Image (cartoon, rainbow, N blue to C red; front, side, top):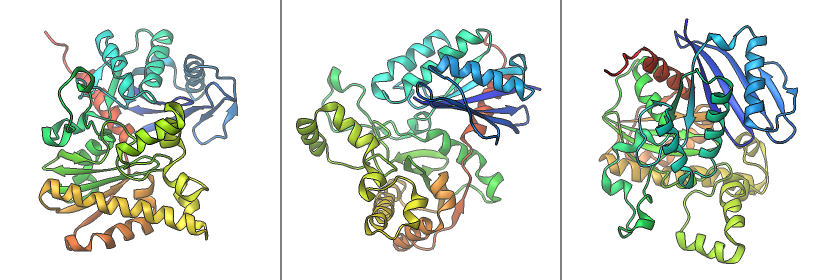
Length: 364
């Protein structure tokens, strides 16, 4: 039976899961602390300390961990990578060829915090298992159906602005939600669905007849809602002001890693810990999170011309009932809207697409 290794590579970790041909998850494995004090976690066992200076070493450890768990490298039929940014051209899940790798690399300036690490993972596996087919699924792909007026910024057409557009992200999550909606809920997919992917990264998507019409993230995963450590919505003039005062690198660090729930609370980016805190700043951070969800939900509803259902997914969306209740209370003006809570299934969706491509006939 075919086994697919689904890979989500970041700067300091590689999270991976093995799925069989029936899309059953057989094992989860994670290399942590790459380039730092490393560790390998196999299944639910405690992490074991291990020197992991780079992604190639981490993949060597992952393959060894799979072997120890009874999964030989030869048992793998493919690896499938979550890639945050497909740039202007890559949308559908596809096999990684030299041309596709070059396109992912060309999108590095659009996702400098993500795509380099995806490439490191692809290259590491290529070096270790050169015959293993690799596939890439793109978080930006689902939003290619947004109309031009939703995607384009009001900028002049110049070489410097050619790639500046609202790409949108979390597309794998939304695409999976659409595909599995009826099977998971027993209900038909609403014509106008407001989908909320709420986690450390958070966004909304207006899904009309199964297609993305608008989404809150834009040029980068930094835009839109208040998030764990990301600022979300902020005036470009404020960003220019920060760059002038702090410099580019410090501003990037502030907006990506020191803002959001962490910046507002001064404590943590963890919504569970904020919910347990009696501190006023913690309560304000949660209120800010819900306020901007409901404020931008109005924009998504307008893009669809109404709403027929709401679906929550992601770690916060699935598990924080207080956030769901607050958002729904703030949306009472939209009427009595059917509600669903669906578990995120991005990895399973990536595995499904990779298996379908493995079975597809070769082009003539």
